[in-house]
Amino acid sequence: MALSFVPMAAKAQSFTRLVSFGDSLTDNGNLFAKFGVPMSPPYNMRFTNGLTFAEYLSGQMAPFGALGPGSVNYAFGGARTDSLSVTPNLGIPGIQDQVNTFLGSGGVFGPRDVVSLWGGANNIFLANPPSDPAAAQAVMAGVATSAASDIGKELQQIAAAGARTILVYSLPNFGVLPQYTALGPAAVQLAQFSSTTFNLAWNTAVRSAAAANPGTNIIQVDIGAAFTAVLANPAAFRLGNVTGQCVLTPSCVNSSFANQNLFLFWDEVHPTSTGQQLVAALTRTYLYAPQMTSTVPMLSEVGFWSRRAGMVDGLDRIRAYAPTPDKTDFFVAAVGDHGERDANIVTQQFIGGPLSAQSQQFYDYSLGGLRFGALHGFGNGFSGGLALSALTGDAKAGLISASPTALGVDLIGGWRGGPWFANATFGAAYDRYDSYERKTLIAALTEKGSADGYSLNSALEAGYDYRIGQMVFTPLARLSYIRSNVQSFNESGLAAMVAFGHQNLGALAGGGELRARFQLTDTAAVSALVGYENFLTHSAGHLQGRLINNTALPFSIAAPAPVGAGLQVGAGLEGAYNGWTFGASYRGSFGTKNQMQHIAQLTVGTKW
Image 1 (cartoon, rainbow, N blue to C red):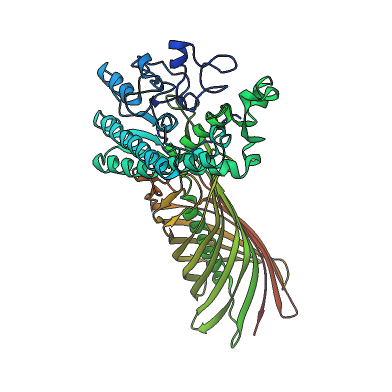
Image 2: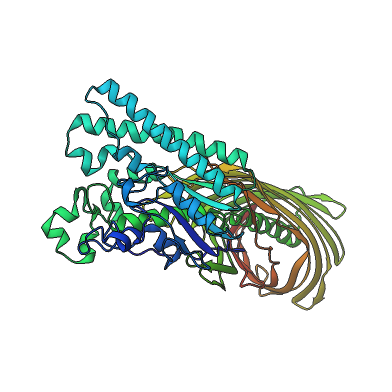
Protein backbone atom coordinates (compact mmCIF):
# COMPACT_ATOMS: atom_id res chain seq x y z
CA MET A 1 0.00 0.00 0.00
CA ALA A 2 1.49 3.32 -1.04
CA LEU A 3 1.04 6.47 0.98
CA SER A 4 -0.58 9.34 -0.87
CA PHE A 5 0.49 12.80 0.18
CA VAL A 6 -2.30 15.33 -0.16
CA PRO A 7 -1.55 19.01 -0.82
CA MET A 8 -1.98 21.15 2.25
CA ALA A 9 -2.73 24.85 2.31
CA ALA A 10 -1.31 27.93 3.97
CA LYS A 11 2.18 28.08 5.46
CA ALA A 12 3.46 24.52 5.59
CA GLN A 13 5.08 23.03 8.62
CA SER A 14 8.68 22.37 7.67
CA PHE A 15 10.63 19.68 9.49
CA THR A 16 14.34 19.13 8.93
CA ARG A 17 14.88 15.54 10.00
CA LEU A 18 13.64 12.64 12.14
CA VAL A 19 15.56 11.22 15.11
CA SER A 20 14.12 7.86 16.19
CA PHE A 21 14.47 5.87 19.41
CA GLY A 22 12.69 2.57 19.96
CA ASP A 23 12.58 -1.17 19.43
CA SER A 24 11.98 -3.57 16.54
CA LEU A 25 8.96 -1.60 15.33
CA THR A 26 11.32 1.28 14.50
CA ASP A 27 14.70 -0.45 13.90
CA ASN A 28 15.80 0.17 10.30
CA GLY A 29 18.53 -2.48 10.34
CA ASN A 30 20.68 -1.74 13.40
CA LEU A 31 20.22 -5.19 14.93
CA PHE A 32 20.78 -6.89 11.58
CA ALA A 33 24.00 -4.94 11.00
CA LYS A 34 25.35 -6.13 14.35
CA PHE A 35 24.11 -9.72 14.55
CA GLY A 36 22.54 -10.63 11.21
CA VAL A 37 19.13 -10.86 12.88
CA PRO A 38 16.39 -11.17 11.72
CA MET A 39 17.14 -13.70 8.98
CA SER A 40 16.89 -11.92 5.66
CA PRO A 41 15.19 -13.04 3.53
CA PRO A 42 12.37 -13.56 4.24
CA TYR A 43 12.80 -10.50 6.49
CA ASN A 44 14.14 -7.28 4.97
CA MET A 45 16.94 -6.67 7.51
CA ARG A 46 14.11 -5.24 9.60
CA PHE A 47 11.35 -6.94 11.54
CA THR A 48 9.03 -6.68 8.56
CA ASN A 49 9.00 -7.38 4.83
CA GLY A 50 9.54 -3.76 3.82
CA LEU A 51 10.59 -0.56 5.56
CA THR A 52 9.69 0.75 8.99
CA PHE A 53 7.24 3.57 9.61
CA ALA A 54 10.15 5.89 10.47
CA GLU A 55 11.64 5.39 7.01
CA TYR A 56 8.28 5.99 5.35
CA LEU A 57 8.12 9.24 7.31
CA SER A 58 11.59 10.55 6.55
CA GLY A 59 13.19 8.57 3.77
CA GLN A 60 16.67 7.14 4.25
CA MET A 61 17.95 7.18 7.84
CA ALA A 62 21.53 6.87 9.07
CA PRO A 63 22.10 4.01 11.56
CA PHE A 64 22.88 3.89 15.26
CA GLY A 65 25.90 6.05 16.11
CA ALA A 66 25.36 8.65 13.40
CA LEU A 67 24.64 12.23 14.44
CA GLY A 68 23.36 13.71 11.20
CA PRO A 69 22.88 16.11 9.60
CA GLY A 70 20.08 13.99 8.10
CA SER A 71 17.62 11.66 9.79
CA VAL A 72 19.08 9.09 12.17
CA ASN A 73 17.67 5.89 13.66
CA TYR A 74 18.95 4.66 17.03
CA ALA A 75 16.26 2.01 17.54
CA PHE A 76 17.26 -1.61 18.17
CA GLY A 77 15.18 -4.72 17.86
CA GLY A 78 14.72 -6.26 21.32
CA ALA A 79 15.17 -2.98 23.21
CA ARG A 80 13.22 -2.37 26.38
CA THR A 81 12.33 1.08 27.69
CA ASP A 82 15.17 0.98 30.22
CA SER A 83 18.83 0.06 29.64
CA LEU A 84 18.05 -3.62 29.06
CA SER A 85 16.98 -5.68 26.07
CA VAL A 86 15.94 -9.18 25.08
CA THR A 87 19.56 -10.28 25.44
CA PRO A 88 21.26 -7.69 27.68
CA ASN A 89 24.61 -9.51 27.69
CA LEU A 90 24.97 -8.97 23.92
CA GLY A 91 25.17 -5.21 24.22
CA ILE A 92 21.85 -4.36 22.57
CA PRO A 93 21.05 -0.86 23.84
CA GLY A 94 17.73 -0.29 25.55
CA ILE A 95 15.89 2.91 24.74
CA GLN A 96 17.46 4.73 27.68
CA ASP A 97 20.91 3.76 26.37
CA GLN A 98 19.94 4.91 22.87
CA VAL A 99 19.04 8.37 24.14
CA ASN A 100 22.16 8.54 26.33
CA THR A 101 24.40 7.48 23.43
CA PHE A 102 22.96 10.06 21.06
CA LEU A 103 23.27 12.93 23.53
CA GLY A 104 26.57 11.73 24.99
CA SER A 105 28.14 11.59 21.52
CA GLY A 106 27.33 15.22 20.88
CA GLY A 107 23.94 14.76 19.27
CA VAL A 108 21.69 17.82 19.36
CA PHE A 109 18.08 18.47 18.41
CA GLY A 110 17.54 21.32 15.98
CA PRO A 111 14.48 23.57 16.27
CA ARG A 112 12.80 21.84 13.32
CA ASP A 113 13.81 18.27 14.15
CA VAL A 114 11.17 15.67 14.96
CA VAL A 115 11.90 12.95 17.54
CA SER A 116 9.99 9.66 17.63
CA LEU A 117 9.86 7.55 20.79
CA TRP A 118 8.11 4.17 20.75
CA GLY A 119 8.69 1.43 23.28
CA GLY A 120 7.22 -0.74 26.01
CA ALA A 121 6.36 -3.86 24.02
CA ASN A 122 9.50 -5.81 24.93
CA ASN A 123 9.06 -5.08 28.63
CA ILE A 124 5.75 -6.92 28.40
CA PHE A 125 7.00 -9.65 26.05
CA LEU A 126 9.95 -10.48 28.33
CA ALA A 127 7.99 -10.59 31.59
CA ASN A 128 7.53 -13.97 33.24
CA PRO A 129 4.23 -13.82 35.14
CA PRO A 130 3.14 -16.67 37.44
CA SER A 131 0.36 -19.03 36.40
CA ASP A 132 -2.14 -17.74 38.95
CA PRO A 133 -4.32 -15.18 37.08
CA ALA A 134 -4.54 -12.66 39.91
CA ALA A 135 -0.83 -12.84 40.64
CA ALA A 136 -0.06 -12.63 36.93
CA GLN A 137 -2.08 -9.44 36.59
CA ALA A 138 -0.30 -7.92 39.57
CA VAL A 139 3.10 -8.70 38.05
CA MET A 140 2.14 -7.41 34.60
CA ALA A 141 0.63 -4.25 36.07
CA GLY A 142 3.99 -3.49 37.66
CA VAL A 143 5.87 -4.26 34.44
CA ALA A 144 3.58 -2.11 32.29
CA THR A 145 3.54 0.80 34.73
CA SER A 146 7.33 0.75 35.06
CA ALA A 147 7.74 0.76 31.27
CA ALA A 148 5.39 3.72 30.92
CA SER A 149 7.31 5.54 33.64
CA ASP A 150 10.52 5.00 31.65
CA ILE A 151 8.91 6.59 28.59
CA GLY A 152 7.95 9.61 30.69
CA LYS A 153 11.52 10.02 31.96
CA GLU A 154 12.95 9.73 28.46
CA LEU A 155 10.51 12.34 27.22
CA GLN A 156 11.72 14.66 29.96
CA GLN A 157 15.33 14.02 29.00
CA ILE A 158 14.74 14.55 25.28
CA ALA A 159 12.74 17.74 25.88
CA ALA A 160 15.37 19.08 28.26
CA ALA A 161 17.98 18.49 25.55
CA GLY A 162 16.15 20.91 23.26
CA ALA A 163 13.75 18.80 21.19
CA ARG A 164 10.84 20.96 20.07
CA THR A 165 8.59 18.29 18.50
CA ILE A 166 8.31 14.76 19.90
CA LEU A 167 6.10 11.93 18.65
CA VAL A 168 5.32 9.37 21.35
CA TYR A 169 3.35 6.20 20.62
CA SER A 170 0.91 4.09 22.61
CA LEU A 171 0.68 0.31 22.22
CA PRO A 172 -2.00 -1.63 20.32
CA ASN A 173 -4.20 -4.22 21.98
CA PHE A 174 -1.80 -7.11 22.55
CA GLY A 175 -4.72 -9.49 22.98
CA VAL A 176 -5.08 -9.80 19.20
CA LEU A 177 -1.41 -10.49 18.43
CA PRO A 178 -0.87 -13.97 16.93
CA GLN A 179 1.70 -14.65 19.67
CA TYR A 180 -1.08 -14.62 22.27
CA THR A 181 -4.11 -15.80 20.30
CA ALA A 182 -2.23 -19.07 19.71
CA LEU A 183 -1.92 -19.59 23.49
CA GLY A 184 -5.62 -19.42 24.31
CA PRO A 185 -8.09 -17.16 26.15
CA ALA A 186 -6.09 -16.76 29.36
CA ALA A 187 -3.04 -15.50 27.48
CA VAL A 188 -5.20 -13.19 25.37
CA GLN A 189 -6.83 -11.71 28.47
CA LEU A 190 -3.51 -11.12 30.21
CA ALA A 191 -1.94 -9.61 27.09
CA GLN A 192 -4.87 -7.24 26.67
CA PHE A 193 -4.71 -6.29 30.34
CA SER A 194 -0.98 -5.58 30.04
CA SER A 195 -1.23 -3.30 27.01
CA THR A 196 -4.26 -1.49 28.45
CA THR A 197 -2.46 -0.93 31.75
CA PHE A 198 0.58 0.36 29.89
CA ASN A 199 -1.48 2.81 27.86
CA LEU A 200 -3.21 4.21 30.93
CA ALA A 201 0.10 4.71 32.75
CA TRP A 202 1.71 5.96 29.52
CA ASN A 203 -0.94 8.65 29.17
CA THR A 204 -0.28 9.83 32.73
CA ALA A 205 3.49 9.83 32.24
CA VAL A 206 3.30 11.67 28.92
CA ARG A 207 0.97 14.31 30.33
CA SER A 208 3.31 14.84 33.25
CA ALA A 209 6.25 15.32 30.89
CA ALA A 210 4.25 17.72 28.73
CA ALA A 211 3.21 19.78 31.76
CA ALA A 212 6.85 20.02 32.84
CA ASN A 213 7.90 21.15 29.35
CA PRO A 214 5.19 23.56 28.17
CA GLY A 215 7.25 24.77 25.22
CA THR A 216 7.72 21.30 23.73
CA ASN A 217 5.16 19.93 21.31
CA ILE A 218 4.72 16.38 22.62
CA ILE A 219 2.29 14.68 20.24
CA GLN A 220 0.59 11.48 21.39
CA VAL A 221 -0.02 9.04 18.53
CA ASP A 222 -2.90 6.73 19.44
CA ILE A 223 -1.95 3.41 17.86
CA GLY A 224 -4.62 1.52 19.77
CA ALA A 225 -7.64 3.28 18.27
CA ALA A 226 -6.36 2.94 14.71
CA PHE A 227 -5.44 -0.71 15.29
CA THR A 228 -8.96 -1.43 16.51
CA ALA A 229 -10.42 0.20 13.39
CA VAL A 230 -8.25 -1.98 11.15
CA LEU A 231 -9.39 -5.18 12.87
CA ALA A 232 -13.04 -4.13 12.72
CA ASN A 233 -13.02 -3.55 8.96
CA PRO A 234 -9.94 -5.05 7.27
CA ALA A 235 -11.27 -4.60 3.74
CA ALA A 236 -11.42 -0.83 4.21
CA PHE A 237 -7.67 -0.90 4.76
CA ARG A 238 -7.07 -3.25 1.80
CA LEU A 239 -6.24 -6.15 4.07
CA GLY A 240 -7.33 -9.73 3.57
CA ASN A 241 -5.92 -11.39 6.71
CA VAL A 242 -5.63 -9.77 10.14
CA THR A 243 -5.12 -12.87 12.28
CA GLY A 244 -2.42 -15.02 10.68
CA GLN A 245 1.35 -14.66 10.28
CA CYS A 246 2.57 -14.15 6.74
CA VAL A 247 6.02 -15.55 7.50
CA LEU A 248 4.46 -18.87 8.60
CA THR A 249 2.03 -19.04 5.68
CA PRO A 250 3.80 -20.44 2.58
CA SER A 251 1.26 -18.97 0.17
CA CYS A 252 2.01 -15.56 1.67
CA VAL A 253 5.73 -15.53 2.43
CA ASN A 254 6.60 -17.09 -0.95
CA SER A 255 4.34 -14.72 -2.83
CA SER A 256 4.85 -11.23 -4.21
CA PHE A 257 5.43 -8.21 -2.03
CA ALA A 258 1.92 -6.98 -2.87
CA ASN A 259 0.34 -10.26 -1.80
CA GLN A 260 2.38 -10.34 1.41
CA ASN A 261 0.94 -6.95 2.25
CA LEU A 262 -2.59 -8.32 2.25
CA PHE A 263 -1.63 -9.64 5.70
CA LEU A 264 -1.55 -7.31 8.69
CA PHE A 265 0.98 -9.40 10.64
CA TRP A 266 4.35 -10.38 9.23
CA ASP A 267 5.19 -12.60 12.20
CA GLU A 268 3.81 -13.20 15.69
CA VAL A 269 4.04 -9.55 16.82
CA HIS A 270 5.32 -7.39 13.93
CA PRO A 271 3.28 -5.82 11.13
CA THR A 272 3.88 -6.16 7.42
CA SER A 273 4.86 -3.18 5.31
CA THR A 274 1.14 -2.40 5.10
CA GLY A 275 0.98 -2.04 8.87
CA GLN A 276 4.14 0.06 8.94
CA GLN A 277 2.77 2.37 6.27
CA LEU A 278 -0.47 2.71 8.22
CA VAL A 279 1.57 3.81 11.24
CA ALA A 280 3.43 6.32 9.07
CA ALA A 281 0.19 7.70 7.64
CA LEU A 282 -1.33 7.90 11.12
CA THR A 283 1.76 9.72 12.36
CA ARG A 284 1.55 12.26 9.56
CA THR A 285 -2.12 12.80 10.36
CA TYR A 286 -1.14 13.84 13.88
CA LEU A 287 2.08 15.67 13.06
CA TYR A 288 0.69 17.68 10.15
CA ALA A 289 -2.73 18.35 11.69
CA PRO A 290 -2.26 22.15 11.39
CA GLN A 291 -1.66 21.83 7.66
CA MET A 292 -4.34 19.23 7.07
CA THR A 293 -6.96 21.45 8.70
CA SER A 294 -5.80 24.68 7.06
CA THR A 295 -8.76 24.76 4.66
CA VAL A 296 -11.33 24.71 7.47
CA PRO A 297 -11.63 28.54 7.11
CA MET A 298 -13.50 27.86 3.87
CA LEU A 299 -16.62 27.47 6.05
CA SER A 300 -16.61 31.17 6.89
CA GLU A 301 -15.91 31.98 3.21
CA VAL A 302 -19.05 30.09 2.17
CA GLY A 303 -21.12 32.00 4.72
CA PHE A 304 -19.57 35.28 3.56
CA TRP A 305 -20.29 34.84 -0.15
CA SER A 306 -23.72 33.35 0.42
CA ARG A 307 -24.62 36.45 2.42
CA ARG A 308 -23.28 38.67 -0.35
CA ALA A 309 -25.61 36.93 -2.81
CA GLY A 310 -28.59 37.79 -0.62
CA MET A 311 -27.38 41.37 -0.26
CA VAL A 312 -26.98 42.13 -3.97
CA ASP A 313 -30.29 40.44 -4.78
CA GLY A 314 -32.10 42.70 -2.34
CA LEU A 315 -30.50 45.80 -3.84
CA ASP A 316 -31.28 44.66 -7.37
CA ARG A 317 -34.94 44.17 -6.48
CA ILE A 318 -35.51 47.48 -4.70
CA ARG A 319 -33.70 49.34 -7.47
CA ALA A 320 -35.99 47.94 -10.17
CA TYR A 321 -39.15 48.22 -8.08
CA ALA A 322 -41.94 50.41 -9.44
CA PRO A 323 -44.59 50.84 -6.70
CA THR A 324 -48.29 50.52 -7.47
CA PRO A 325 -50.61 52.49 -5.15
CA ASP A 326 -52.29 50.33 -2.52
CA LYS A 327 -50.51 47.25 -3.84
CA THR A 328 -47.74 45.05 -2.46
CA ASP A 329 -45.47 43.10 -4.77
CA PHE A 330 -44.81 39.51 -3.75
CA PHE A 331 -42.13 37.36 -5.32
CA VAL A 332 -40.58 33.92 -5.08
CA ALA A 333 -37.34 32.94 -6.78
CA ALA A 334 -35.42 29.73 -7.36
CA VAL A 335 -31.79 30.59 -6.64
CA GLY A 336 -28.47 28.96 -7.51
CA ASP A 337 -25.18 30.22 -6.08
CA HIS A 338 -21.76 28.81 -6.93
CA GLY A 339 -18.37 30.09 -5.79
CA GLU A 340 -14.74 29.06 -5.88
CA ARG A 341 -11.24 30.45 -5.52
CA ASP A 342 -7.60 29.40 -5.41
CA ALA A 343 -4.90 29.81 -2.78
CA ASN A 344 -1.20 29.13 -2.57
CA ILE A 345 -0.59 25.53 -1.50
CA VAL A 346 2.66 24.45 0.16
CA THR A 347 3.63 20.80 0.60
CA GLN A 348 6.38 18.79 2.25
CA GLN A 349 6.29 15.21 1.00
CA PHE A 350 8.30 13.76 3.90
CA ILE A 351 10.21 14.88 6.97
CA GLY A 352 13.41 16.49 5.73
CA GLY A 353 12.01 16.88 2.23
CA PRO A 354 11.88 20.15 0.30
CA LEU A 355 8.91 22.49 0.33
CA SER A 356 7.06 23.05 -2.92
CA ALA A 357 4.43 25.71 -3.53
CA GLN A 358 1.77 26.05 -6.18
CA SER A 359 -1.63 27.63 -6.64
CA GLN A 360 -4.51 25.18 -6.18
CA GLN A 361 -8.22 25.38 -5.49
CA PHE A 362 -8.97 26.60 -1.96
CA TYR A 363 -12.74 26.14 -1.91
CA ASP A 364 -15.63 25.22 -4.17
CA TYR A 365 -19.28 25.46 -3.12
CA SER A 366 -22.71 25.20 -4.73
CA LEU A 367 -25.96 26.24 -3.04
CA GLY A 368 -29.53 26.15 -4.22
CA GLY A 369 -32.90 27.04 -2.77
CA LEU A 370 -35.64 29.64 -2.57
CA ARG A 371 -35.81 33.35 -1.91
CA PHE A 372 -39.19 34.98 -1.38
CA GLY A 373 -40.51 38.24 -0.06
CA ALA A 374 -42.51 41.40 -0.59
CA LEU A 375 -41.95 45.04 -1.59
CA HIS A 376 -44.25 47.98 -0.86
CA GLY A 377 -44.31 51.67 -1.72
CA PHE A 378 -44.85 54.11 1.16
CA GLY A 379 -45.19 57.33 -0.81
CA ASN A 380 -42.93 60.35 -1.27
CA GLY A 381 -40.49 58.16 -3.20
CA PHE A 382 -39.89 55.73 -0.35
CA SER A 383 -40.31 51.98 -0.61
CA GLY A 384 -39.15 48.96 1.31
CA GLY A 385 -39.53 45.28 1.78
CA LEU A 386 -38.43 42.01 3.26
CA ALA A 387 -36.82 38.95 1.67
CA LEU A 388 -36.38 35.52 3.22
CA SER A 389 -34.11 32.84 1.83
CA ALA A 390 -33.28 29.20 2.43
CA LEU A 391 -30.35 27.70 0.56
CA THR A 392 -28.46 24.46 0.99
CA GLY A 393 -25.80 22.54 -0.88
CA ASP A 394 -22.26 21.24 -0.74
CA ALA A 395 -18.82 22.72 -0.20
CA LYS A 396 -15.31 21.32 -0.38
CA ALA A 397 -11.81 22.58 0.27
CA GLY A 398 -8.85 20.24 0.07
CA LEU A 399 -9.40 17.51 2.64
CA ILE A 400 -12.55 19.22 3.99
CA SER A 401 -16.15 18.88 2.84
CA ALA A 402 -19.47 19.98 4.34
CA SER A 403 -23.13 20.59 3.53
CA PRO A 404 -23.90 24.26 4.27
CA THR A 405 -27.39 25.63 4.88
CA ALA A 406 -28.08 29.37 5.02
CA LEU A 407 -31.38 30.75 6.35
CA GLY A 408 -31.37 34.46 5.62
CA VAL A 409 -33.47 37.56 6.09
CA ASP A 410 -32.91 40.87 4.29
CA LEU A 411 -34.52 44.21 5.10
CA ILE A 412 -34.52 46.48 2.04
CA GLY A 413 -35.28 50.17 1.74
CA GLY A 414 -35.06 52.71 -1.06
CA TRP A 415 -35.76 56.28 -2.07
CA ARG A 416 -36.23 57.64 -5.56
CA GLY A 417 -36.51 61.28 -6.56
CA GLY A 418 -36.80 61.56 -10.31
CA PRO A 419 -33.73 59.95 -11.87
CA TRP A 420 -31.85 59.89 -8.58
CA PHE A 421 -32.09 56.98 -6.18
CA ALA A 422 -30.52 55.63 -3.01
CA ASN A 423 -31.00 52.16 -1.55
CA ALA A 424 -29.94 50.41 1.62
CA THR A 425 -30.15 46.91 3.00
CA PHE A 426 -29.38 45.05 6.18
CA GLY A 427 -29.32 41.28 6.26
CA ALA A 428 -28.49 38.36 8.51
CA ALA A 429 -28.34 34.61 8.14
CA TYR A 430 -28.10 31.58 10.36
CA ASP A 431 -25.51 29.30 8.80
CA ARG A 432 -25.34 25.58 9.51
CA TYR A 433 -22.57 23.30 8.31
CA ASP A 434 -23.73 19.69 8.47
CA SER A 435 -21.99 16.53 7.25
CA TYR A 436 -18.59 18.08 7.93
CA GLU A 437 -15.92 15.58 7.00
CA ARG A 438 -12.13 15.76 6.95
CA LYS A 439 -10.19 13.08 5.17
CA THR A 440 -6.99 11.82 6.73
CA LEU A 441 -4.03 10.17 5.05
CA ILE A 442 -5.69 6.85 5.85
CA ALA A 443 -8.65 6.66 3.50
CA ALA A 444 -10.76 4.57 5.89
CA LEU A 445 -10.38 7.06 8.76
CA THR A 446 -12.27 10.34 8.51
CA GLU A 447 -13.13 13.02 11.03
CA LYS A 448 -16.72 14.20 11.19
CA GLY A 449 -18.63 17.02 12.80
CA SER A 450 -21.00 19.93 12.38
CA ALA A 451 -20.83 23.64 13.09
CA ASP A 452 -23.12 26.63 13.50
CA GLY A 453 -22.49 30.17 12.39
CA TYR A 454 -24.02 33.45 11.33
CA SER A 455 -23.39 36.13 8.76
CA LEU A 456 -24.35 39.80 8.66
CA ASN A 457 -24.33 42.48 6.01
CA SER A 458 -25.19 46.11 5.44
CA ALA A 459 -24.96 48.08 2.23
CA LEU A 460 -25.70 51.52 0.81
CA GLU A 461 -25.81 52.48 -2.85
CA ALA A 462 -26.74 55.54 -4.88
CA GLY A 463 -27.09 56.18 -8.59
CA TYR A 464 -28.76 57.98 -11.47
CA ASP A 465 -30.95 56.81 -14.38
CA TYR A 466 -30.17 58.23 -17.82
CA ARG A 467 -33.08 57.61 -20.20
CA ILE A 468 -32.48 57.60 -23.94
CA GLY A 469 -35.58 56.40 -25.75
CA GLN A 470 -36.21 52.80 -24.78
CA MET A 471 -32.82 52.57 -23.08
CA VAL A 472 -31.97 53.38 -19.48
CA PHE A 473 -28.32 53.65 -18.43
CA THR A 474 -27.68 53.57 -14.69
CA PRO A 475 -24.30 54.27 -13.11
CA LEU A 476 -24.19 53.57 -9.39
CA ALA A 477 -21.75 53.37 -6.50
CA ARG A 478 -21.99 50.97 -3.56
CA LEU A 479 -20.42 50.57 -0.13
CA SER A 480 -21.01 47.33 1.78
CA TYR A 481 -19.83 45.43 4.82
CA ILE A 482 -20.16 41.68 5.30
CA ARG A 483 -19.13 39.58 8.27
CA SER A 484 -19.24 35.81 8.61
CA ASN A 485 -18.67 33.82 11.78
CA VAL A 486 -18.39 30.08 12.38
CA GLN A 487 -18.71 29.00 15.99
CA SER A 488 -16.21 26.68 17.67
CA PHE A 489 -16.74 22.97 17.09
CA ASN A 490 -15.08 19.62 17.71
CA GLU A 491 -14.36 16.85 15.26
CA SER A 492 -15.26 13.27 16.15
CA GLY A 493 -13.41 10.21 14.91
CA LEU A 494 -10.69 7.74 15.79
CA ALA A 495 -7.44 9.60 15.17
CA ALA A 496 -6.11 13.15 15.37
CA MET A 497 -9.46 14.83 16.00
CA VAL A 498 -9.22 18.60 16.29
CA ALA A 499 -11.16 21.12 18.37
CA PHE A 500 -11.49 24.43 16.52
CA GLY A 501 -12.09 27.89 17.88
CA HIS A 502 -14.48 30.30 16.20
CA GLN A 503 -13.73 31.72 12.76
CA ASN A 504 -14.33 35.29 11.65
CA LEU A 505 -14.20 36.83 8.19
CA GLY A 506 -15.12 40.45 7.62
CA ALA A 507 -14.66 42.93 4.78
CA LEU A 508 -15.64 46.46 3.82
CA ALA A 509 -16.07 46.66 0.06
CA GLY A 510 -16.54 49.49 -2.38
CA GLY A 511 -17.48 49.34 -6.02
CA GLY A 512 -19.49 50.65 -8.90
CA GLU A 513 -21.66 49.36 -11.73
CA LEU A 514 -22.96 50.56 -15.05
CA ARG A 515 -26.31 49.01 -15.85
CA ALA A 516 -28.31 49.15 -19.08
CA ARG A 517 -31.97 48.25 -19.57
CA PHE A 518 -33.81 48.05 -22.88
CA GLN A 519 -37.59 47.94 -23.09
CA LEU A 520 -38.43 45.38 -25.77
CA THR A 521 -42.21 45.74 -25.49
CA ASP A 522 -44.67 47.16 -23.01
CA THR A 523 -44.30 43.99 -20.95
CA ALA A 524 -40.77 42.74 -21.66
CA ALA A 525 -37.27 44.11 -21.08
CA VAL A 526 -33.67 42.95 -21.08
CA SER A 527 -30.83 44.26 -18.94
CA ALA A 528 -27.08 43.96 -18.54
CA LEU A 529 -24.43 45.21 -16.15
CA VAL A 530 -20.69 45.60 -15.86
CA GLY A 531 -18.81 46.83 -12.82
CA TYR A 532 -16.00 46.36 -10.37
CA GLU A 533 -15.86 45.77 -6.62
CA ASN A 534 -12.97 45.24 -4.24
CA PHE A 535 -12.23 45.18 -0.54
CA LEU A 536 -11.24 48.44 1.11
CA THR A 537 -10.35 46.63 4.32
CA HIS A 538 -10.64 43.00 5.33
CA SER A 539 -9.83 40.68 8.20
CA ALA A 540 -9.62 36.90 8.17
CA GLY A 541 -7.76 36.43 11.44
CA HIS A 542 -6.42 33.11 12.67
CA LEU A 543 -8.25 29.89 13.39
CA GLN A 544 -7.19 28.25 16.63
CA GLY A 545 -7.06 24.47 16.86
CA ARG A 546 -5.83 21.73 19.15
CA LEU A 547 -5.71 17.95 18.99
CA ILE A 548 -8.44 16.55 21.25
CA ASN A 549 -7.33 14.52 24.29
CA ASN A 550 -3.72 15.04 23.35
CA THR A 551 -0.69 16.72 24.91
CA ALA A 552 0.17 18.39 21.59
CA LEU A 553 0.40 22.17 21.76
CA PRO A 554 -2.49 24.25 20.38
CA PHE A 555 -1.90 25.66 16.93
CA SER A 556 -3.03 28.63 14.91
CA ILE A 557 -4.07 28.55 11.25
CA ALA A 558 -3.56 31.73 9.26
CA ALA A 559 -6.59 31.85 6.98
CA PRO A 560 -5.79 32.79 3.38
CA ALA A 561 -6.42 36.49 2.80
CA PRO A 562 -9.92 36.99 1.35
CA VAL A 563 -10.21 38.14 -2.25
CA GLY A 564 -12.58 40.86 -3.44
CA ALA A 565 -15.39 40.27 -5.89
CA GLY A 566 -13.51 41.94 -8.76
CA LEU A 567 -15.08 42.28 -12.20
CA GLN A 568 -18.90 42.25 -12.16
CA VAL A 569 -21.04 41.15 -15.10
CA GLY A 570 -24.68 40.29 -15.39
CA ALA A 571 -27.73 39.96 -17.60
CA GLY A 572 -31.45 39.65 -17.12
CA LEU A 573 -34.78 39.14 -18.86
CA GLU A 574 -38.12 40.17 -17.41
CA GLY A 575 -41.71 40.12 -18.55
CA ALA A 576 -45.32 40.33 -17.42
CA TYR A 577 -48.49 38.48 -18.30
CA ASN A 578 -52.01 38.62 -16.92
CA GLY A 579 -51.01 40.18 -13.60
CA TRP A 580 -47.91 38.04 -13.10
CA THR A 581 -44.28 39.00 -13.55
CA PHE A 582 -41.48 36.69 -14.61
CA GLY A 583 -37.74 37.14 -14.56
CA ALA A 584 -34.47 35.35 -15.17
CA SER A 585 -31.13 36.82 -14.15
CA TYR A 586 -27.45 36.03 -13.87
CA ARG A 587 -24.75 37.86 -11.96
CA GLY A 588 -21.09 36.86 -11.99
CA SER A 589 -17.98 38.14 -10.23
CA PHE A 590 -14.40 37.40 -11.19
CA GLY A 591 -11.59 38.37 -8.82
CA THR A 592 -7.94 37.53 -8.37
CA LYS A 593 -6.75 34.00 -7.49
CA ASN A 594 -9.50 32.70 -9.79
CA GLN A 595 -12.15 33.89 -7.36
CA MET A 596 -15.57 33.44 -8.97
CA GLN A 597 -19.18 33.70 -7.88
CA HIS A 598 -22.10 32.84 -10.14
CA ILE A 599 -25.65 33.68 -9.05
CA ALA A 600 -28.65 32.67 -11.17
CA GLN A 601 -32.34 33.18 -10.42
CA LEU A 602 -35.77 32.47 -11.87
CA THR A 603 -38.43 34.72 -10.33
CA VAL A 604 -42.23 34.78 -10.35
CA GLY A 605 -44.19 37.65 -8.81
CA THR A 606 -47.58 39.26 -8.49
CA LYS A 607 -49.26 42.29 -6.90
CA TRP A 608 -51.89 42.14 -4.17
